[in-house]
Amino acid sequence: MSGLPAYRPPAPSPEALVHWPEAFGTRFTLFVDTEEEFDWGAPFRRDGFGTAAITALPEAHRRFEARGVGIVYLIDYPIACDPAAVDSLRQVLSDGRSEVGAQLHPWVTPPFDERLILSNSFAGNLADTLEAAKLDQLEKAIRLGFGRAPRVYRAGRYGLGAHTLRLLAARGYRVDSSMRAGYDYSAEGGPDYTAIPNHAFRTGPHEAILELPLTTVFTGRARGGGGALYDRLGRLPKGMGMAARLRLLNRVSLTPEGMPLNEALEAIRVAAGEGVRLLNFAFHSPSLVPGNTPYVRDAADLRCFWEWWEEVLDLLDRLGILPASLEEILAAAA
Image (cartoon, rainbow, N blue to C red; front, side, top):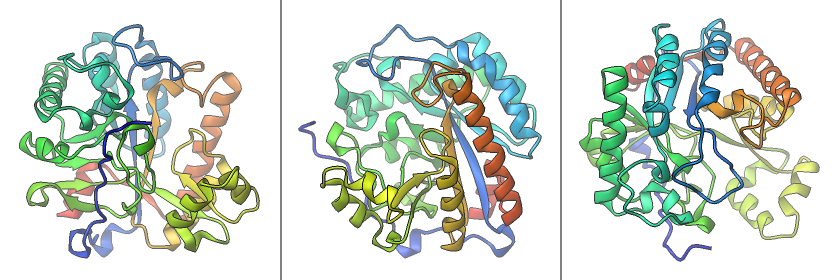
């Protein structure tokens, strides 16, 4: 348990919500946390990571490209500094719909002036000068590798802080996708996003940042209780698991990582029915190779990963929910 006060961004005002043009329809986007491989169960380290899993990215990209899906690859410092990883990413960016953004893992991004502790794995907990310096080092590495500055950002571990949006706006970022709607990381010293909806909204200084929260859907017969009921269930022994098994209330993120297929399909239908106009999907790039994440431990898990995507993309097709590139999103939001 961290002693730091949690960063709790408030719910956006009705005026800050994006009102998408009718012609935009209902769309979806895919952001991939493109990062190094490390032991998810071990304490954070400055070293001991790998970047070999990125070699699986071009083939994975071709699968999505065949379905018309452009991807935003949110790359962190170890990836941006690896020439082979940069070459792999350059290959996939030639589709004209995909883009490289930035993801800050503070524990592997210089300068290393902070203590290596759990709360400091959320970059927003760092002093604003140190968070700014790490952002600058990450942007510099991306510029060197790709010849342009990133326009979209995600904080590693969803770790926004009170200074982050100001720092992003000052560096010309247009989009943030760090807020995970309905999730609370305050027990680890991270932010609390329980007030954040699934709808896109404008935030930061002068509302210069377009926030695209990761979509979280409450399903089940008691879904009207939403996050408040889910939080109360969490205080009961096995309360969340029992509610999910009884199909009373379940919290579903739009990711193949830890989210069973049938629950994801139901969540998509619920979100579309509730008027969410932009569904935001995500996964971690190391999951493309078995053994790197808890979600894809072996070849069987990898088959399930791709079966999840095939079924999800088929449902999106049937519902008329089309993929949207970052450029299309910015144009429609404007």
